[in-house]
Image (cartoon, rainbow, N blue to C red; front, side):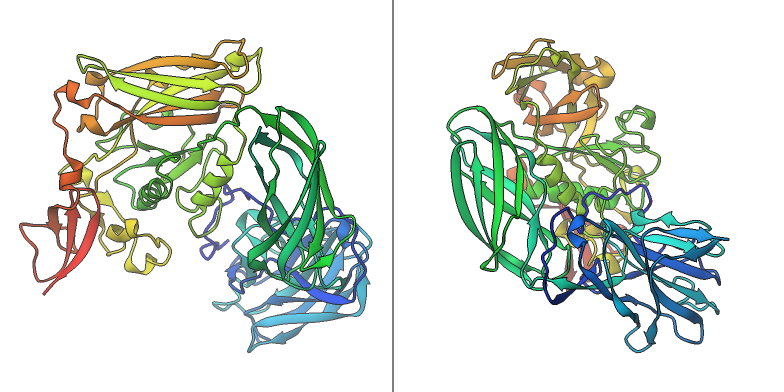
Length: 614
């Protein structure tokens, strides 16, 4: 099976279902609209590299589809009549095989192949009226001759959606298989009977707010009409408080059935702490009134709503040629979110490694690797759960939206003799607990600006100048010059010690009273820290861990104060941050001074720049 054209693996789970079709009554209309994940026109291809017969499907689900009609089906198709045959579209309520052949219970239609436009399309003799909550729409074809195109003939969109990607074939996928972890089929289904302007909200569930403070509610808005959505009007009731609002979308939500976006609605401040019922009504789309489109739930109002700082843990090594993307991601996130981003980089097999991989907090079976709040187990440190793009930022922000059980503040300072780092974490829970001891605290000691000379400090690198568009940030510049080993890197966020391994996790008391601080203390023997270069560039992260799940529930970070007590000379970063520290040619060879042509200059701040000398 060839998946080289899809930048993902089965372990990358889908974070959000962009085309989830929630229950709701479909309105009778006379417009048509496409239902597809292929909204950008950018597709990749998947296949077995075998001459065989393929069946591919997407799944449409949701009560709001009932009464709509399927008019036609199309899909990007790179084959031609000389190397493929028997292309047909079909509809079925379930995916079934008889004698290993696909059997459908709905209509089929022979497809027309436009080899110039690279698309196959079929219209059904009569539009198919949807009368079930779940419907599969698909296409089948035979590969009769292997070419570069027919080796991987199945069009796939990189992003995951609830439409999914289901496949069966005569030689490789001998039963219907859900391959949605690889993306979404690029099938486009034309639906009729929709209104010009129609939409829905997601189910509301429980939201959280802080008394005397307006509440921001992130709602998923789905387009169920034939027009792009440029504005909405909404009203709401929370307890006895009512209000309304108007929202103009910065970018209109395109007219694809089920396509979604997140909109932030503002609810008025509630005066007192409590649990209140909430109803949010979607009143208008593009100025046109809707009826009966609402979302119900409840709002829990705290005296103080804890701020959630999600923790990204990255696993890397200077010997790992793909690991620079994790290093870049940490630097970018620290730049974008300097106050709230907490990055922890665990090194393996290089001078910054302080523990065996078996002692990592996550199970790591390959590098680079990452996790956020120890929720997922395995993520890409740059792409996250996406197949391309800077997905780790999206995922980190979503994790920060998870309501934390307590606020966390951290403090850290050197002892008077400079031999010990004393750390303190203060937690405040908005509700009382009798099982507070399920929460435990881990202190992690982190070093910035680690660097050195010698082969083991060179960062191995597999990236090329052609990767500039993918690793689009300035922080990636040293790694997209074609160097196989990149010199002069200054490494930040490096984990150099953790109380998890030295002293163990410390439990909170079982009985915790609401809004009363709980203080946990820990310490590090600074002289025993294996990797330490600059006492002024040490930080402590305090992690609040739910021991029942192993998830980091919240965290905080603090610079270690009192570096002057250690006797270790601190570098004046402000003075030296723009001074050249070393010069290299494009082959990574160190130079005594810049030479004519392109030079890599490593600054004392840790940033590398490429300079042309005439």
